[in-house]
Image (tube, rainbow, N blue to C red):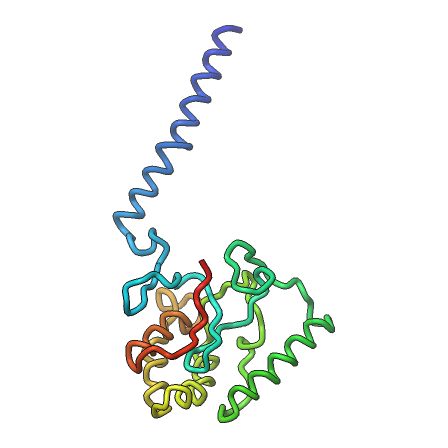
Length: 202
């Protein structure tokens, strides 16, 4: 009995050390060595070198000179990384219908020169509420508003957005997409900082 008890203790200690210390340190060290940027959180910096967010976590932008993100149901005000979640509202929900209708009305009012229907991703939330990407259609639909707010040729804004379209992962996973924060930074680098940018959440 005593021998079995000591064996169980030794196995418990070895397991704790291996899985609680050695494995986490090894994987963290490997990640830092092979993918240092991703391991640090894929952080993005503004023109002053200050961290303003992560390319992996969506945030909201209110200024007309920037791409606007997908709506967010994460937290009470949206885009809350500590409250990541979807809305859980189904297609028959009147509340969802009313919210989408209000968003469509707002987007049409804010983008009077946009061509075509409002892209679906501009009125639908992601499962996490923190999707940092738009479809290329959702981003390019906003070109007239951004160009007017920045007083530049729409073709130049379109060029910046198209240059930031990311292809499918490994060539076949997912769909082409545009990272909102990274593209807004590219717009700032090209045309200067737009005023009244929504400050990133801490």
